[in-house]
Length: 204
Image (cartoon, rainbow, N blue to C red; front, side, top):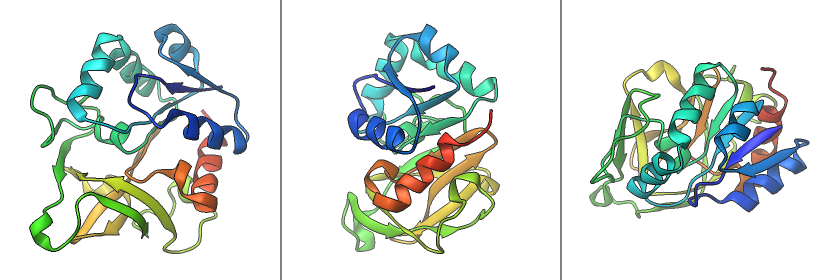
């Protein structure tokens, strides 16, 4: 069973539909007890960093998410759900991130000659082809993005894939049981469904 966290900030219906298409049973929940029993957890996200952190804390979900990760169970953080894993974000005015990953989330510089937000299809450049989520994918596949901020990691060894947009930015993080795409696999058609299927098939 995969628990999809409902904290009022996610593209939840699309994520659930895609995971079920990929062969998983799912539950959409904000109940810590249900999340604690789940084999895998997905934290989707669309919205503002501060609002998301405050909701996770208000509902008692921040602690249970960290506990799930600490127990070495598979975890997937999508877009904002990925950014929340870091220590801080330039978007935030009141909150810090969950601090699971070391680094800061920064905003694209529109003066670099690119449109902000970065929206639409772009390519993944594999840095860690052995990442389980990338299994069976073609080289430089296209995936769908919609974001104004991107993660800057302290440890570049955790970068599984990167993407070119005003320079190269991290588009997929992988550390042990943590998988965190900046793109939206649930909107990335066949490539995204393959990525989600790979996550579904991970062994605990």
